[in-house]
Image 1 (cartoon, rainbow, N blue to C red):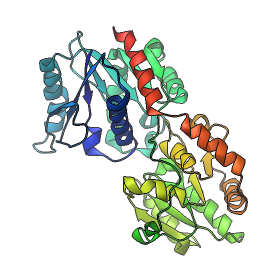
Image 2: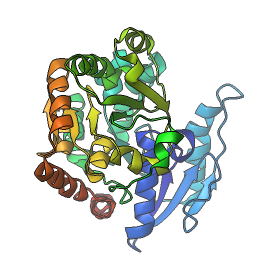
Image 3: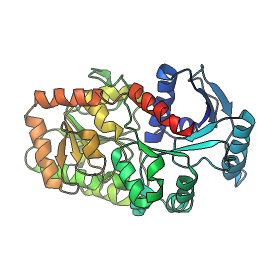
Image 4: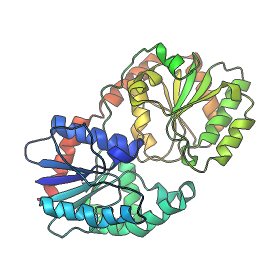
Amino acid sequence: MRIAILADPLDNQRAGVHVYTRQFIQALVDHGSDDHEYILIRSKEGDAFPSLRQIVVPNTTLPIGWASFRLFVLVPRVCRKLKVDAVFEPAHFGPFNLPRSIKRITMIHDLTPILFPQYHRWHSQWLQKRFLPGILRRADLVLANSAHTRKDLMAYQPEVAQKTIAIPLGIDTRFQPVEDAALFQRYLLPQRYFLYLGTLEPRKNLLTLLDAFQHYRAQGGKTELVLAGKMGWKNTTLLRALTKNEFRQYIHLPGYVASEDLPALYSHAVGFVYPSEYEGFGFPVLEAMACGVPVMVAANSSLLEVGGDAAYYFPTHDSRALAQLMEEVETHTDSVRLETARRHAASFTWANYVRSWETALQQLI
């Protein structure tokens, strides 16, 4: 089959969908079979993936309406011209306007704009509610990144059950224990820190983490806190809570951390905390485990699935329970649990993902 991948996430973001798209394409290059030809359609030229054919369809915010014209007219036109057999949209928003002869594959990472609209900007809520039902209805194959995401899809639109497949994602093999003494100066980090990594946005439940950190320090804890990642949206309450926290001087916000520095950032942490209210998958949980770091995770959504038996769990909004876990992780190293966590993380590979992906493609033949 000739398959076009709408690879815009390579060019327009750095968060989870970008990571997924980049790692998936690299895995196709490394492990894909000779049965399929893959073509990337993207908005900017790039040096990555030189072995794949890449078509640039430029995107811009001006003139007004160009982005929509590109998405609904130009990209489908390119797909028809390329005579592809299938089009894959990895960012759960399309593909659109294709003839029936071209199969549609869409990836669903989570249903947060539907399930938690209060945590998203109004246009994101509106776009998902307006277009997602039709996307799912017209898709020939729907991929979910976890069993929990598939379960949510079944509850939201039961008629897509027969064409929806859950395939767990993989993690990059570069995530392993590593030391980098220069990291501390590069990002002005304390010598001992608990780490959160991700966009700083309401769904990530950082208010619970801040409250837990205050309890933990009030009880005599000495480790500091690092909240790494770009500032997201709707953060007035978070910024206010940071200002009011009694131990604000021990809370560090280094901002975006370069991809090449992430293994060291994880490895040097005393523990990793992921308090999110909902995740479709949760790359950071496995990345931290692979780096040999104790992981404390909110007991909800796919986090239970991804964390398996190796994570420390706490009730999602129970800051005192999280504070107790932070104290436990600080004072006691459970080497057996850490080894279990490393083995667990190692089972999530992109080679396995590509094999499952190409098996799923058989439904389209």
